[in-house]
Length: 80
Image 1 (cartoon, rainbow, N blue to C red):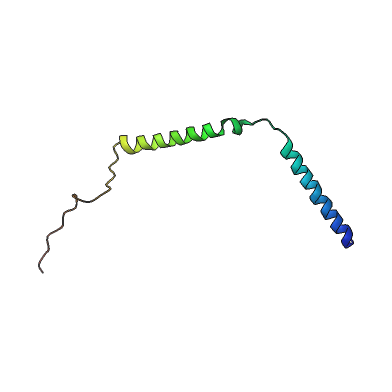
Image 2: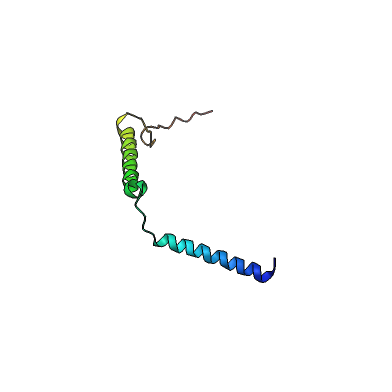
């Protein structure tokens, strides 16, 4: 292919892509399911997850053993 023809073809493709993008940006589209309910579902899922873990961590009686202070007593030294 000749260099000037290749350059012209490339510019034509770029221009047509730009026209398609501009055309899509100017169209008004109807909101879909995710636009309508996406944030509510995300917030509901986060609330459910947090409340479930809070209940699990506080109410089912897990012994967490977070700190050994007051539970560990030193052993007596043995003389050898």
